[in-house]
Length: 60
Image: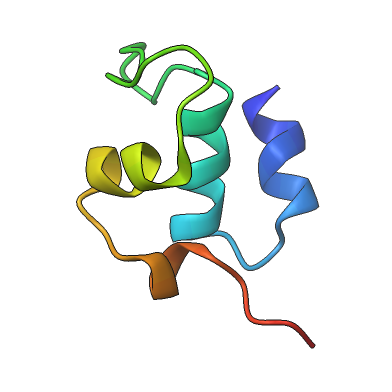
């Protein structure tokens, strides 16, 4: 499923990681993200150690 998510978000990077965390998919090492079930956007951003601008795509 990770490959599907990556193919849907062609630019990759933080957006792919955010979707992976939101869907509770494991990382490359098999570790699950440390966020609650149905995490809020702020919880995902904190889990990534990122900021909203890097995660949220700007409208076209």
